[in-house]
Image 1 (cartoon, rainbow, N blue to C red):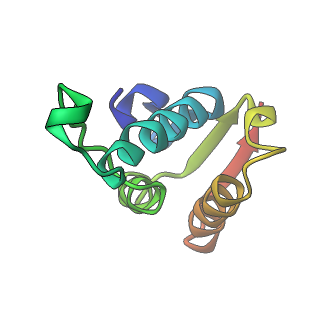
Image 2: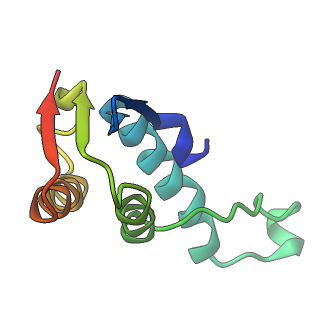
Length: 113
């Protein structure tokens, strides 16, 4: 899944708005964690047979840094399905709140739908 899969950009009357799906973002982060943990485990080809699949996924921090850059210049950020991030994963919540603060700090507006 590409991070563009959970971002939708629209421009109407000179106002750039982006819609972000928290459900898709949550699933992307979970997938990233599952695939990246395979690199941390030792592998012995004699005992284990085939090597684990190799996936290159950005860390949660890298993902949100890329999102901050993608949202630069956006006037309105619409957050959809926030309940997917409102409970549970503390790291994901902190990163997302930081993203929202970055949008607000540069004069953007955040709307929850």
